[in-house]
Length: 451
Image (cartoon, rainbow, N blue to C red; front, side, top):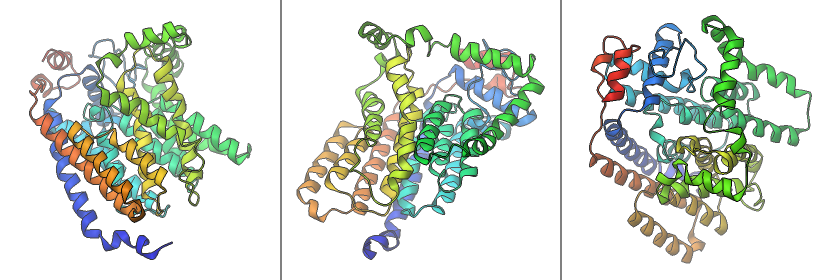
């Protein structure tokens, strides 16, 4: 490997630190303005109430919210890791703006810890991996779900690093994956099933399954003990409720409708889903970009250096079930559910680009197209592709590090534009005055929802 390329980040540490500083400033402003802009949302107050009660007393209770009844209700779909930052932020400040920002900070702290551990296990370009990872959590659609105390982005981030570390530290990996599912979002179990099936197929060591199951189940056992102690109907009653709410009557599943793949059924699912409210950028980000990542499973001549494929293939394979379910089966197509495969795909691509390697022309173009979907204005998009044409014409001078600099520069510029656009919008900050004395109360819930 060329020593000049190996030492690139050391030689250009000043530039990489400039990127990090710029990203920190822009992201801080973007998060602040978005937190001020967001209006009331049912899922936010439910998650905040339940997670605040968990942090302060190991209860998991949002009984005063509409349609939620009892402690540790199976209807509470965002687990405790979703809103640790929110709960602590509210505990300290009793201010919703600080609460929202605190939860994004919580995600950043988790991400920083996971990155640091991962960098000790893989030979990556450190700054490049850090920058791509942090950009991923703020450029994917509905990233602000974290500000709303929802668990999709946080649990998907933990899940990704659990998958990534599987070949390096199997025990830590399984604990992270189990935590991402039962303490984050239950839907992540679909990703794990496909990930693990791929591992079994490659390893062909069935005897490992029992040991893996023991470690994987540790977070579940902890959660089930809490449920058994606190839920009014015990663990069995909770499991019955869980089946009812998430399988038999869930509007995003609707088994009879979901299993109908006729042209008429697919058209109806699109016509009556949230898809009608999307813009073209969201459509490309949720449909095309993840598909391009998944297709890497079949493009065996791409990204083949070293053991890279062995690491990324099971992670990519794990994206399949939720991606296929979302586009072919889900009657609602709520965009926040897309985080499970869009964010996962962005983190995979960031990991690929942080490996010390050179890119072939087709790989270079493939990566450029994927990241171009996440630019926030037509003008930036146009300039981005003009420079692609210039780089293509002088492709003999291209190296991976310069490509990373180019992509990162435009993604940060895109964030600047997004920050400016959100700052111009009318603020819809909800009223939380009735929540200061007691968060988990009927008056708090009512004033928040009606504001």
